[in-house]
Image (cartoon, rainbow over all chains, first blue to last red; front, side):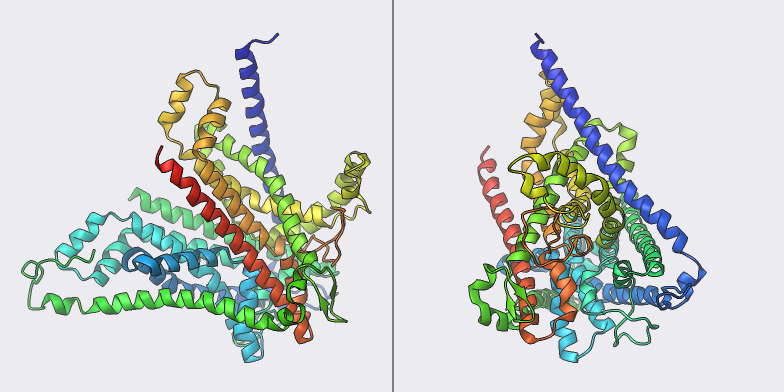
Length: 280
Length: 326
């Protein structure tokens, strides 16, 4: 018969082996996805992928230049809307708001963080597409912005709360007005954290598809104005991957690689920004 | 923060403190306006969805929640199939992801050699950032054929032989269906749950762990009796966050769930979820009642997400109270 200690050691070893196995399995699956995307996507990336318009099915070549431009424009506009809005809401929660109203705003922000992105798409469809009568890049940007704001708000509040109270007291004691204290001292002290929050929010929406399906729709043409249906990478990827044409599926892998690469690069940049801030 | 300094200390130069503070009401007003806009946004969202879903709510009432027919031609709509599909795919996802995610967290905190820890946790966090559409596409082109050719026949040959389980694995192995959708979804939330639970386990105070080790506990006993109880609130939050993510997820599912309005006992059969139904049918819906029914589905998804997260918050708060007295 095995001794008590022996049995405990054995259990321990079994569990630790299981955990290592789980870690190996998880990492292997995820690396599998990444290598698949990288290998299949790399063959699709060519000069024309970045410069040409989509070709009709059956025709050789063609690219997704219009979709790349559209995605960059809409994500940029979304960031331009959501950054000031999120910073202001976060500042309200950390510095200005008190009591019941602040609690309500925080609760609403939590709801919005977890709101399914496709429901946000439906909402913006009702708000901006149905009322104007056509799909538009602006509607796409607004729905991305709605997904960004709560993320920026949350990180802004958290980061501002990390700034020591003594810093605020010192600024106020020498007669600094509150707005100047917030903008020039708190924002500066929390700069790396705020940057990280904004970059992570951008990374989150840059790969979003669901909110664009009913707002920006898609288009095979160049982006002339954001007031029309606007080409974008993710919806193109969805349509192409679901299509029966091999050429289009081929391009879809290229789009997948491009989106994944861009999102991962932004995430890494966000983390480096935070680290750089910590070292200083 | 609102305490005003004495005027004598605060007025260098000619400008009076009052003049210098003139910007403050404006500053506070601006942040208040932004916060009010956020409140207004969510209220508008709920109201607008309710108004737009009104035709369907009026036409079907509570029956919408208990009927399974979905027929655009006769305009008979019921939400049972997508609701069941949403809950089932989420349940499969969590069942598959949770043990692996906890294993990863445990490995990260207790087994992983020091120098590898940062790159490993960084890798997990980066994988959580991969867009869901990429998971969906990979599921369709790589995982689904694999399921059809190898996994599903193997399941049918083993578990499918058991009397009670045979219904779950009935039907032709097509690769696409509820099981594959749940697995892709699980893969998607895996890094997310793993990285949050890793953070939770890392917050267990060193002294607590060391005193347990000092009494001769094995690493597993430290995990079971010290770390898991200490971090259970955080772990619960991690699971709920993963759940919230999985339940509203659209793209990872739409590719592989099969998109059929049919309830089936078999996990191999194609089905749909609320999000995938919206993604597939919203732009093609003709007829006001059809559109309203889809919007009501969206509203239901919103409410389910909100209820789950709200219940979790409430539960966490109730857990927190007895602990304060310890």
